[in-house]
Image 1: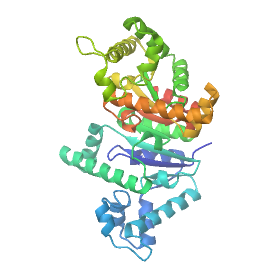
Image 2: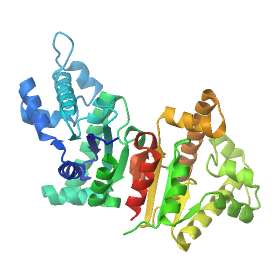
Image 3: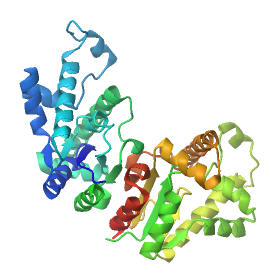
Image 4: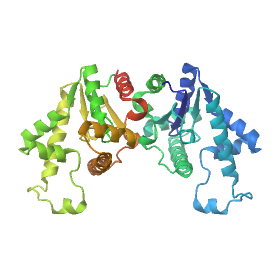
Length: 195
Length: 195
């Protein structure tokens, strides 16, 4: 049974996004990342930058902030509304046809679909720091700080949305180390697994 | 760079051992599992059954038992001696030539070797229970109980030996769900990754 939906979760700097783009290109699947933000902005009326910042990096980073955030009559916060909009968009995209979705807890949102292959990409500290330094012109300290912050927020967000631990092997069909295997090999293996 | 040493860690009942055997056969690598026990028995003078039970299921399951176990003049317990013997055997096997090693925290023991591909195989509760019921003629309750006990002991043992969390994606080059992908696909992917 070929896997027509591929979700990619990844450690910051591991190259998961680039791997996802290339997998989509090779398999002829639609690649969904930026388009999810545009669509969510249209549906919710929220600014794209706000969505980009919030959509996967942290809906609510602490119980304290969660408790005091403003809500509508049904008890939904803006972040809940944003999550619900993105959940609907991801489900609709998966209904439409073969696609690769990066981030946004899509693995959890699509968990009951048998054709959905969930991938987690991770890498060594050195590999990730080097990539971030090159890609965003950062110092090593800045890259390490960014990795720590982003991963922490992703983990908190994933736990909040799914009640699962981010990066635990059993939540994914395949987990790959891009630093150990190389990005090309990761792309090959995902394409092979999707067949 | 081809991976000439493959270690396989696995959830009980996931088929990791069978996958490892077939990978070794296809790649023409030596398969090491039972032979490690025989060799350790010869070097330590311990009974094979004792080694089988102890070698990966738990060196010391509690601080209490660890504190009161008998030791030699250097402070080593029988379990420490067994671990050291197996560590030496695994290192010697890896020096000798291409091999697949199942269990025994070999991923950690061989962590500094660049040609070593560490695999973790996991599977859904249903898949594992079904396999164990068929393989060992168990009832569903017996299979579920065995899974829980074995996994717990493996996790404790892995933590004790490595100070890492068992089943955390970042400790392995590749993690695979045998229930989602199927055992044949897992074998294909590991062979492809080893190239």
